[in-house]
Image 1 (cartoon, one colour):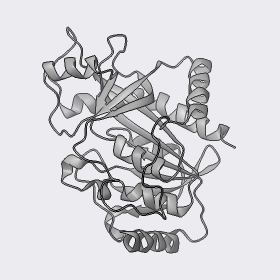
Image 2: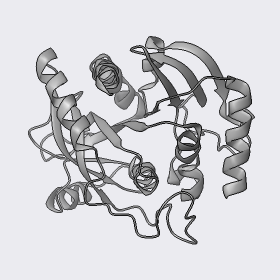
Image 3: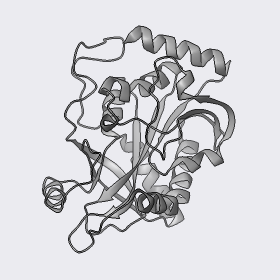
Image 4: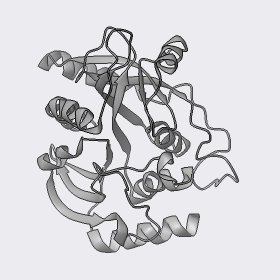
Length: 272
């Protein structure tokens, strides 16, 4: 894997010349419009990058964007990869490892999620404070690459407390509908049954989705501070459960996207 990571990193560096990203951003389902706020300098198609997976989900455009957001240098994944697409976990987190090798200092991740906490509402933002991994495997299974990180990385604090605190302060100042909670990651791609929603709530989850946790595990393994936020695109509690189609999720994400963009932009500006 390491030669593939190095080859992809070298290719990207050749395309972006002397540009040095300080922050990596992963955009989830229906959340690609943040790119409109970026002063784009380079845009690379995933399919052109050696060994890079290619997005197969229709709402993920599949571009690696380099530019300035809030005056800071960023690299943005406009579209991510999921285990349910048939990729291995190593492929799912391949771009995170490449962004680290490109020199990013912090990672910001977004996703669309179902709300399991009855206090939440559709289009709320949820700052992730912890997670539960129900994926069938994870990207650290197999031989450990000591050049990336330790064999047994500590996961007691996977989400950076300083960035969480700053995000909540930003949210209060702008009167944003921001919650905090635990995100549970499941394989998908089907949505959950009512009994499964109940189970996920009972084990301590506030929101459910099909991504993010693998990327966070890989980032923590590489000692990369992480901030993550979910957009609540549908409610999964008794009395609020209804049949959901992708367009409903995209519409809810679009409604929340301006708040998410504001939050991420100001959070990046606050970083040293």
